[in-house]
Image (cartoon, rainbow, N blue to C red; front, side, top):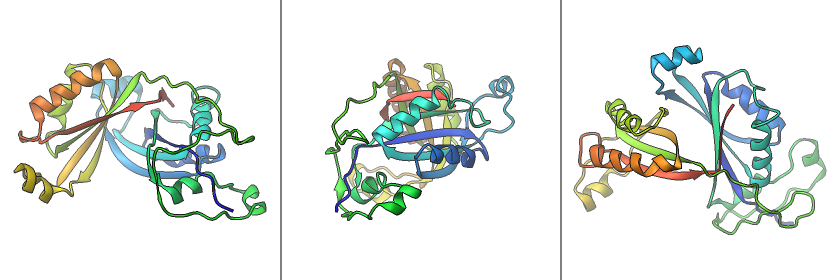
Length: 249
């Protein structure tokens, strides 16, 4: 018996520090059981922090992956009856995934809990799964329509050298961005850039995660690239992705 793979989605949840575990427990009760948790730093001004009643800019970031149908159900419930179930302020958004390891994609659809004890473990091959996902109904196996996507927001990721985050954020704010979350990271592609582009990048980076309305995306990306691009001291690298749904927690 081989496992049947279903289209996966990624949900990113950004909440107050030490609230990530509570959120994961809620998601697991809803059937979503594959998570990564990390720590980031918010960029809200002190005035906004006071208005929201927040004491710390440190954030828990939870990355959750599940089959599309299960994730759409969780997104709907988090936007309605589950809203406020975890005592925290924060946001979540979800994105479609276009490729991943077949072994992981198939494992996401495996039964958990008591149901897992009653069903045989299917055979899973470790190949790369790309844009071949089927959208299926959990009960009948028939194809079902997608949950309608709002598609009103975009995710912008900006990688910059440490020490330039606030300068780059100021540029984004001037064009309508309301802040974001910062992750520490290391760049690992230095030699390739030096060889082909003559650019030497610092290894220590900060990555800004910003959600903006679609109409602001291109203006912000163009301005950041023009003022803080690879040939400047900030050495910003910018990319974006569509967000299916975006809502407060």
